Length: 269
Image 1 (cartoon, one colour):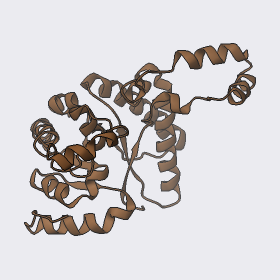
Image 2 (spheres, rainbow, N blue to C red):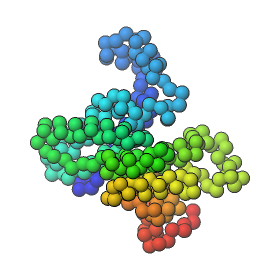
Image 3 (tube, one colour):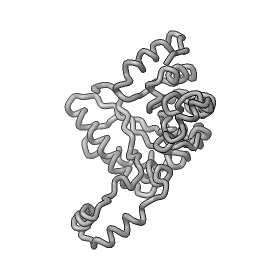
Image 4 (cartoon, rainbow, N blue to C red):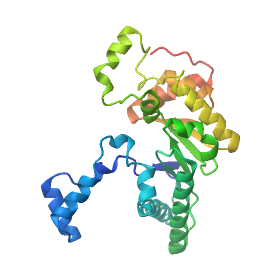
């Protein structure tokens, strides 16, 4: 990736996924921390959530424990500085997930800037980096102009944006989604092909309001929709700069992007 931008998302999964779950793991952690087993177990129990995907994850972890964001920013920027020492041009793009309020991103940006000052002084090397966010909840799309004040790029997380906009769990929808499609309630699986009439409007609003405040903001999308031809045609029409998808979908995504650039956006599945 010498000379190319690399987007790195800070910790996003629900916090419980990082915590020990078995008695053996808890005892091992208690020993490492020189704490009683029941103290650690009680703390872990207190952090369990009924709906963790809408709970303590993403930016919220960084707000509650700024040192978590600080640690990640230090690691990213120190690694980039080491690359430059070796003659490799590193271009990190630090992406804060699950932001829904401008002040969340403002606070995280300040922490990243603190880490940058520390690393640049430590290494004697300045690394050019940019900071942005995932737009993956409806509120973020609606206040994109406020968020753009602190973001140099948006990456639309359309997997989560679809879940939050449709109140539809990607993990649980399998029990009825096929019937919805069979009966014509939904034309297609919204997790495979973007719901342009609903979720697409949120993306369009965020694009318009983000660029209204910051005309040069970099806009892209990451997730399964980034490899879907119909969705790629839509993203091209509304002016996104790039799509990101899983590796096995790259050939189809490149072909669809080329067709979109030539004005052919009516794709067959």
